Amino acid sequence: MDEVLTYLKKNPTYFLATVDAEGNPQVRPFGTIAKFEGKLYIQTGKVKPVSDQMLAHPRIAISAVDAEGGWLRLAADAVLDDRLEARQAVLGEYPELQSMYAADDGNCEVFALENVTATFCSFTAEPKTVTF
Figure (cartoon, rainbow, N blue to C red):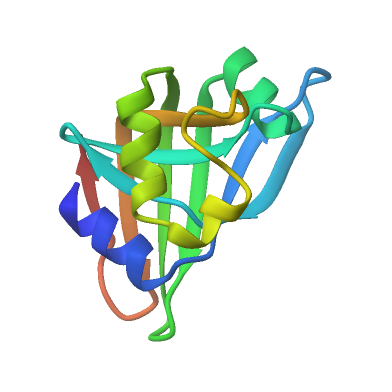
């Protein structure tokens, strides 16, 4: 898990894939990742379609690329954690978001990533898969 966290912190823009209500894939850039109580978390706004999509279809995918020609592919279940402490922990790592979100604003949401399979890939090495 820590290897995935380090990779996503080093490469802070990743792409999050979800499924919309019609079953169509939706992909967008994302940038939050934090570790709280032994799990990785992402953050979004309750008013955004991505929130509804993760609540309706919690299986998500993440893809990130590094400057050395490698990439990360991750599949996980996004599980809403509605605790104030979880929202505070994630926002605490992203002070730049605190002008748009507050942990108690009724809009900020955080999702724990569970049942994670992450594969580190490159054209020069065998893939490495970790699960947590």
